Image 1 (spheres, rainbow, N blue to C red):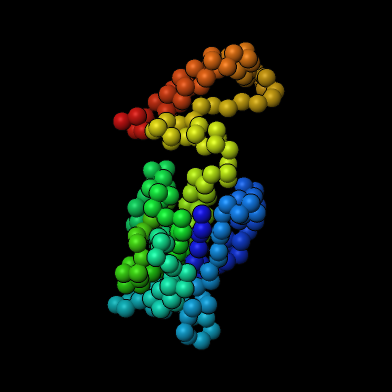
Image 2 (cartoon, rainbow, N blue to C red):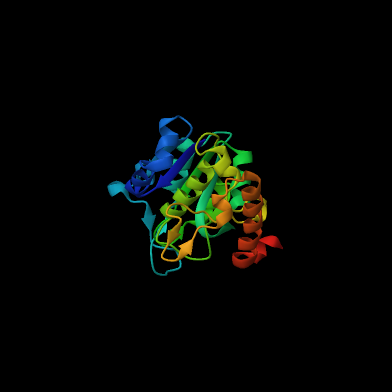
Length: 221
C-alpha cells in the first residue's frame, strides 16, 4: 500500500512513521509512505502557500496553485485523493475497508491555517474527517487514517489480531488480561486460566456482546 501525505510540516509525519509497527511495515516493503512538502510546489517567493481570504475575515487560506501542483506531482490513474477537513465524510472502519477495496495508492492532503481554497475540491476525490471537532492542521488526521489503513495490509499485523479487532461485525473486542493474576484485589477471570480453549472462545464471544451493549449499543442497531 502506498501513501503520499501532502503537508506543510513534514517532520510531524516523519516522527511517527519511523517508529513501531508502521516502521516495520516500511522496512518489510509492505508500506510505502512518501512525505510531500506543499511548499516545494509554490511559484511564489519565500515558499508562500497561503493568502488572505477574498471577502475579508480572519486567518489565511491555502492557495490552489501549490496544493494542486503537489497533487498532480504524485497522482496517477489509480490514486485516490482526499482533503482532510472537518466537513468531510466521517472516517470509521467501514470507510477504511471501502478505501482499501478501491485503491492501493492513497493521497492525503493536510490543511492548515483557516482552510483550503474551495476550488481545490475540483481536483480531489473527496473529503475525510476523523470527527466532529477542529484541529490546527491535517497531520494528525492523516496519521490516523494511514495507521488504520495500514492494518488492513496483509503482514503488517498478525491476521488473528486483525480478525479479532474492535468494529469487526459491528462488535467491540473482548477484554484482555495479562500477569499478575490478581492486582489490588482485581482478578483475572477464572475461565481464562482454565486452559479450555473452547470455553475461552465462548467466553470471549459473550464478552464482545456484553462490552458492545454497555459501551457502544448503537453498533448493535
